Structures are given as structure tokens and as C-alpha cells.
Image (tube, helix red, strand yellow):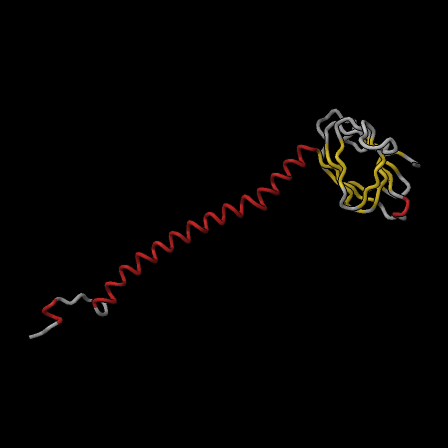
Length: 164
């Protein structure tokens, strides 16, 4: 690692971390210690991420992770995370997103609402409208049946049907 950068939200007492997207230039490293748990997602390139804290797995799993585009890493509040572009990324910068847990949950709920709840509500309304239309159609056909049976719109009495 040749240098260290700190994102503005890490050590700020102003409030919770803010979701965002950042660039990490080749040959640079960044150290994060978020106050709020969140999700790190790599949007371009590959990184070497070192995460402190209790590690699970074999003794040789020291907290180092190699992440590439699309991969995510949950980070707990107060955990220390160091990111560095993986050497085979060349000179291209790495981009990553940070989403605090509360924002991730809200985004997930909004996505669920947009992808499932709204279409389900619309389908329910469509079923109700179709049922109403079918009911009106049945009543209309029942009323029209008299027109068809009576002969083009007028009901004939027995006298009219059999003239003397």
C-alpha cells in the first residue's frame, strides 16, 4: 500500500454513514471504519479487502478477501476494512459502493414493493374490474335475450301473434 485515504463519513460525528459510490485509483489504498454496519459492493475492477475482527474458518483465513465486480462484503459497525486494487486490475480505477444497513433494508423494501407488491395490487384490481365487466355483460345479455326472443325489440301479445 502506497498511501491511505479516509472517506469523510468514517470518523465524522455528524451522523450516520451516507450511501455512495467512490473511486479508488490504482496503487492507492483506503481504510474504512464505519460507525454503522453496511454493505460494500464492488462495481468495477477487483480489490484486495482486509477486514479485522473475528474470522470464521481455517486458521489461514485471516480476513483477506479478493472481491471483483458485483461481489459484496458485509461490514459491521466499527470494523476496520482496508481496500486496495488488486494488482492485475492494471491502471484502471476501482469503483465501489457503500450502503449502510438501514439504507440497504430500505432499498430492499422499495425494490420488493416495486417488483412484487405494486404488480400484485394491480393484478387484484384487474381481477375485480374483469369480474365487474363479466357481471355487467351477463346482465346485458340477459336483458338482450328478451329482445332476441320477442322479435327485434318488441314483445308480441297473443292477439298480435295470431291475427283473426
